Image (cartoon, rainbow, N blue to C red; front, top):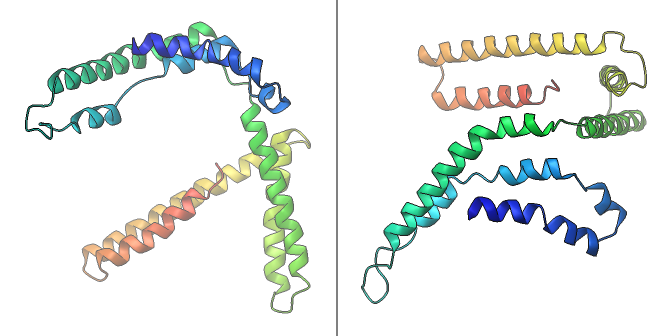
Length: 217
């Protein structure tokens, strides 16, 4: 019933929404029946469902055992097990059978967003040149970095020819990951030797983790 209800819902409600909502923005979000089948088949249950069942009290306010509590927990566990095993293991085969692939729209949208953000950064760098507290050499370094980033994303978007921007960027990121790993090892060694506390080590490593997460791989 759980699986069947999700399949029916995913293949009926979109048509009702289409009949009621004719806005262009809603039409852009429409997908065919194949992606909807993948979404419907992805309704695996897990820890939240089991936690909700286990949250049922053992007794009612009247002091009597909660009716059918064991049955509810058993049915919840059965649904979780069946959906994880049946739907989870067969989902890749279903995707291949339906020939569902990415159209690249999300990646193109991300590149456009990054290009726009980079353009805004360059405009702000130019505006900061009028401030007395800024240094030209600092702004020059930042502008060179963002100009390279802009060329890289333009090449990824196909607006200019890729002159090795992506390869050089990936090489830089790999170098930085290796350097950060060496820094982490040095901090662990200092902690093991008792020269710094565990709290200090974790605070510095957290900064390294944030720097690594900012890498645009």
